[in-house]
Length: 240
Image 1 (cartoon, rainbow, N blue to C red):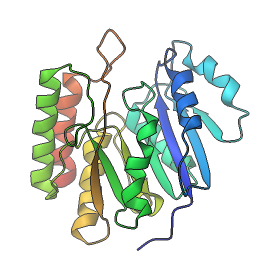
Image 2 (image 1 turned 45 degrees about the vertical axis):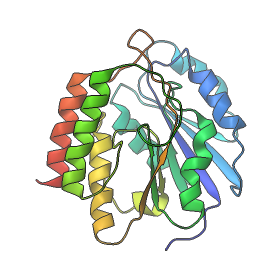
Image 3 (image 1 turned 90 degrees about the horizontal axis):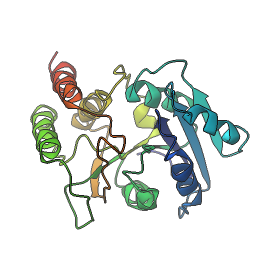
Image 4 (image 1 turned 60 degrees about the vertical axis):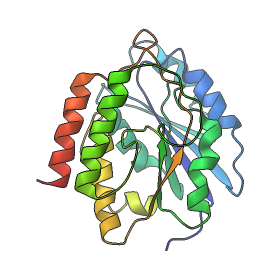
């Protein structure tokens, strides 16, 4: 359906991640991707106030890295949207900066696209035999409720709509307009690619990934308010 994939843009939204930012960049740089000719890393600092922005200064001259600074905190959705604007790769991959998702899994996300079977691939923490840190029951329960509601309205059978690991052909992103600034990005983009899928314009795959979740003491940011926002976005972008 689309041209072969040669280049990848890895988009890293960042907000107050001074303890992990150097490590995640190092891991992304070290990943070797078969059949990919060029790897572009786009870091969007979303108004960090903990010293992250200063740590990013040393990467501004790296040939493989683009650093963009938001003047104030706008949210993950706004940061990813900016990353999409700057990206030049054939495929666009979202990588959180908090080390919950390991870059050594990129080959899993890329495989259905490189084989010509998919245009969008979602990671899933709930399928496959990968390792997962045991943490919050109510988070996983709420995630499953939101995923089920989203599936009912999109007619998709995803198991983990909120998963932070997603990869898209650039042609797919070029066909949709995104508006949500915070974590509502996940249900919004799912609704919009779901509509493309219903028209036969987008093939969606899902692959199992490992997940190393953080506690709130370790810096986890999403909370129950974001769950309510996700519920609103599912209804907004699928019905209204």
